[in-house]
Length: 468
Image 1: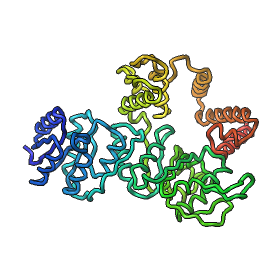
Image 2: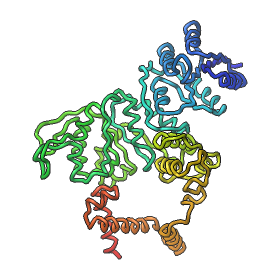
Image 3: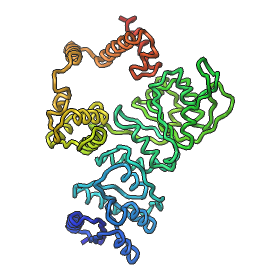
Image 4: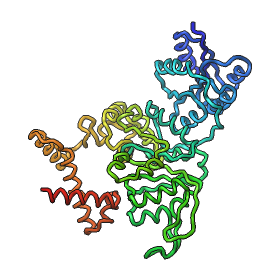
């Protein structure tokens, strides 16, 4: 029998029984409690355990409140928080409150034992916790190891008033993470202002960020307050920061370094207290190497960094995400949330979701609105996991890409991806320019590109034609 003692706090008798049996079989001494008041009384009257498990939601008190009280008394005690409700409000609050780790229900008993082994050697170095503040659910859902780590990062970084750079593929939820960092921070009562820098034409982006004075340029009939001033005291989220023009990055650098700027056409120095969170799907280090992004701006933004995993790297979260989106669809469309059948969830987990969570959300909304049936089957889904394509025939242009790639590879060509990507970009740009009457700014806006990005792609297209 081990000399280590484990305490369990959970109002669910079945959870207490399973955990007690598991831990006792592993040689630990176990003491179980049904209410936080009972566990607190034991903590006040005798020696503390080596590890403590507590549920989050219990009658008569919150597990997070209990966690806060325990960490005030025993800051070095490893506390593992358990909950069937895995969201950012619970997990970020738990980590911010000093939890050693977070265990999502239903859990694997091997994971329980692994957590205990991990917690026992923990040294008494944890500081006393700050009071736990409540946050609101921003839609981040999941209990995979990748999401648990993400929640841990949010819980810790939210309290630090430093810039954050969020990276990851398109559709992974970068803005949701930014909102979570804001809502879990001391700035939660202040504005959260978001701006997609790739969606604003270059000549308007400066005014959008910093504002302008009346008469600063043609059409500026009145003073306009920019996004930095709108976010005073709060958080400014700059999405797709990699598309920001180099000239404008110079102005951004001063705000990041000094917290001050001038409006366009203005002489009054404006001082702001704003936390900047930036996001991109592009490799900024590579952009710096190619002199398309300033190294000093990257260093200012990259004080804290969060790398979001693609959905294919956390497929265990797909069932919870799907149910979350079906519930949201029911709220908007009315009625009862659709229930996915087991075979559908398995098919969705077998698919790689190149569009990540955004693609999954769109698929769930289409299914929810496409049938009156209460239960959804694989046939209700637009995708086949084995082909990663639609249920119908593959579009002709995709077949053409496939055949062209195959022929080039069979001919022994190299660099096929870059060659075909250039041609694909050229056709897309031709279509956008034709649709917009040759107007580059409008073409860039309709494609969701910055004007500099479109100009760069057009230049590459011209150079390719000249070399042919």
